[in-house]
Length: 163
Ligand code: GDP
Ligand code: MG
Image (cartoon, rainbow, N blue to C red; front, side):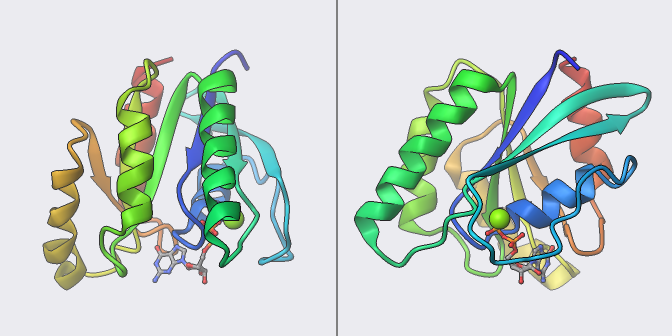
């Protein structure tokens, strides 16, 4: 496929879960060893007859701040270099963190389209609190639960609009 989507975001927001969800139609790659450090994963997704590559970035999880900073830079670099569209994943359970804000600052300057994906919106109570993520200022903001799949169709519909 000639179109590539990169999934970025800080550790534990659900990037790999979303990655597997997006690839579900094809059952291409399944990470059966969650928590395993991995630089990135590639897969091919298929939606409404449109096919595209998906990159899951940042398998690396660390508590060290400067390792984290390096990881962010690396992810953004991969995203800007290789992707045509970026899915910026945040976590509705933790709410907005400083790390989210730092990443948002970088991504807002990207020339590539960025969709903000607020994950772990598993119920209507979380949906209420998740509206705080509009303050990050992304025109395209989606709320979903990668675990249940609810809301992922809207994200995919928007992704394929750009192909
Ligand atoms: P990553 O580090 O960003 O790749 O995050 P993972 O995909 O490994 O997920 C981190 C944790 O969040 C795991 O325990 C997932 O099961 C959990 N998770 C992912 N998506 C959801 C979701 O939609 N709802 C809930 N409640 N948990 C989720
Ligand atoms: Mg991961």
